[in-house]
View 1 (cartoon, rainbow, N blue to C red):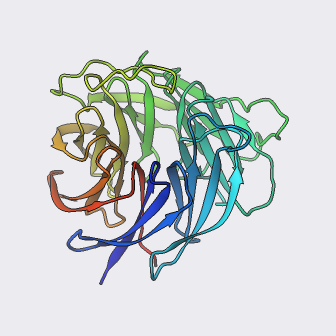
View 2: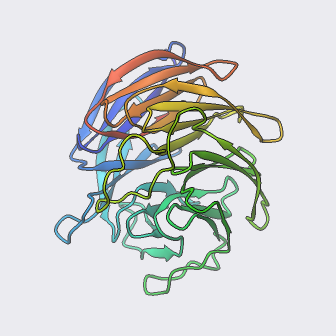
View 3: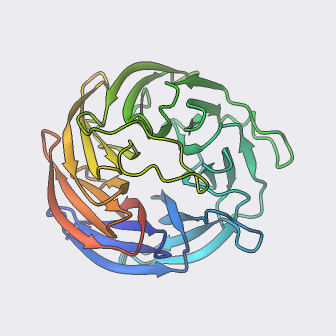
Length: 358
């Protein structure tokens, strides 16, 4: 039976849950649970090596309990995920991604406003390098050609890019590496997550506070971003503009925009964005030039922070951090979402990665 393996980071459950996803029906089968991962929040998948890197954070880290990244070795037959190494970090990380070469990771630190680069756990004691990415940095995404890493600063309303050609690697004691370039976005929009199309000449950005999706044209030589389009993902939801959140700020409640994740199908045909206050998924059609058209909303799990599209591009998976469930939707030829499966997870599911072993 053809299947994908699904891994879900569950923060309050302190675990990564493993499931098998049937490639035809979308049915989910629970395979196991890897414990000892307190506050697991985001993950990066190395499909070539069968490794999964899970960032484990707490809101207020201390010298006794520092943030860390844990390396998990994946069994392609059983789907099991075994801890093999870990690495303490100097800052919390809300987003991790693989650097070119797959021996290092990037980490986006929302609370400390940094982008860091460090060796994967088990790969020596190399230095941690810091990049000047801006307040409330929320993602670190490497371009498909591996030449640049892009960061979204939610607090400064800025997208920055850093060249990865070996000329700006720096050291642990150096000043933060300056951006090769940046572009300002609408004040108060709060850029959060971004995705590239396969060729790397289009970049899609989800804004947490305004609910907009921005489409940028990317110069693959310089890394520069040029705005092409802005479309709302919260049209008709009757929400006010959101606010920057932190452990020290008051919860603004469920009447404000609170967008979370953004995913593009492998063929580049459809884009999906999650909104947590209304627990909905917005769907967009992507045309041949990379521009998007809003299609509609689908109700989903309570407070959907994590989403993923399986490697076949047939299914969208959504986990609700307040529902403690994951739902599977079949993606129709018109971009519609049809619920096909649902399974219970450990507490506080935040992040989903899908792997189809060779």
